[in-house]
Length: 338
Image (cartoon, rainbow, N blue to C red; front, side):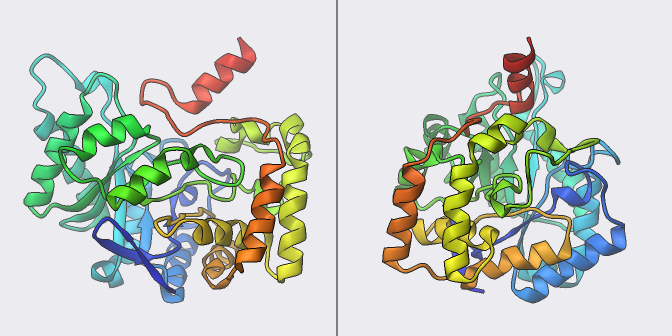
């Protein structure tokens, strides 16, 4: 697989989001199946694996996903970029909070669970509005100078906030929501990141499975499945967004690839600094997604696809700016049910 840069970190141009092995997509597979899936992805050419300290809070316990990923990547730890994320919770803050000690405690706990003595890419999972981002960026700089992390990133962040942080310590990557259904990042995030050498790592690049064509208005999401709260996956929005899926399906059929592969190839063609991390708990789907790197769009194919997408209206917009004070599911529930 070809490689791209997230700041100074070199990664496979498609990575792997590992959350689904611990929670968020209904019933989870066995640990042995999950470890095998991650190792198959690496054998395929994937060198970028993404987790977070909170993944596992529903069915298991916080940190479960980090422990799982750590076990899986142990045989090839030094040859990959391992990314994890931390939250700064309000209950951890006080008038005498030492921000370095607080963040360092999160990092130490993550490294222990991951079985490593450094993290390649350490994300602030969501901005805490009570903590200045320049102060967080200063701590990240210290951790980089100490060799504990190689680079740092921010998730679901605005360009203004990103710029404030980047002035203090260079940001390697921004992990925001981006797909054919969520294109806000094209307005400011991508231009800023291209100008400043920052990678963009889209999560949910296949729109939580919608763009694969395998989700219908009759699909039922159960248990801790986060898709129960994704606005675009309400029954009415699945039906309303069908024209986008029709455009994608038609192009994919002509190209001889799957919908998911084409949706990933579209963003790879569009931006040289984009590195999507599709997440799946199914081994077949994981390898299918990684195989999108080999799907090449001609300039004519891309322009035709862009024009068709631009003519469509997206229903169930979520957006890419979120803070730790209010998650998208909380705000969406309030807007729709209160």
